[in-house]
Each structure stands twice: as C-alpha cells, then as structure tokens.
Image (cartoon, rainbow, N blue to C red):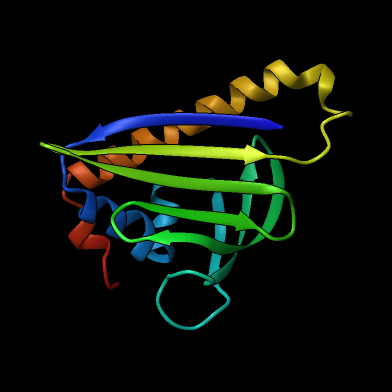
Length: 153
C-alpha cells in the first residue's frame, strides 16, 4: 500500500472549507489540482454520498483515468472519493478549530505494489509532495477569498 497524508490550518470555518472541497468539487477541483485535464460528473444532482464522476489527469507525463464515487460524505467534516476503476482513495477531513479549520488530505493506493517495490521510496516521496501541494493549494485558494468567485459558475 502507498499512503500519504498532509494537513494545513486554514483561517476559515470548516463549513467554508467543506463547501469548497466537497459541495463544489466539480467546479473547484481543477483549481487545486492542475494535473487534472478533464473532470465530469457522471450522475445528476449535487455532490453527496454515492455521487459519481470521472477524471483524466497527467502526473509527471503519465496520463491516467479514474472513475470514482463519493464513498463518505459528512457535511463540514469529511468527504472521500473512492476510485472505482483502480484501488485508490482520496479523503479530505476537516476539523473545526477555534479560529479556523484543519484540513487533512489522505491518499491511499492499495493495489499490487510488487512491480513498484524497487521504486517505493521515490514513489512515496513523490506522492507525499503531491499531498502537501494539495493542502497548500486549497489553503491558498480558500483563504484568498476566491471561494465566492468559483462558486456557481
């Protein structure tokens, strides 16, 4: 298994962070994850438990596709996106703090890593840098007040 986790303190209420990350996921995801070149909802309605989507991304020159579903949806607290085409999970956990919120991003890949074993350290450090970049990007976007400019485009 490959697992990475990164956290950041965001100077906004947990509800605002959750709205940006989860509720408005399809409008905002490409802003904090520029590797995504295509993103679409494949179910109608708002983002919530069971909602589905599909993404195409290019990471370090490698193109990948993932169909996913929302496997956990706890308003103002947590949203998990479980890839249905590969064994990957992206989880965004939000804890209310007195003066803001802590965002924790967790990425897990539970597929066979036998062939990847010689590159495990490199892969782990690359994935960890990516997780840190995710929380840093979200923190910058949410704190800059761009939430209102992205919502409801």
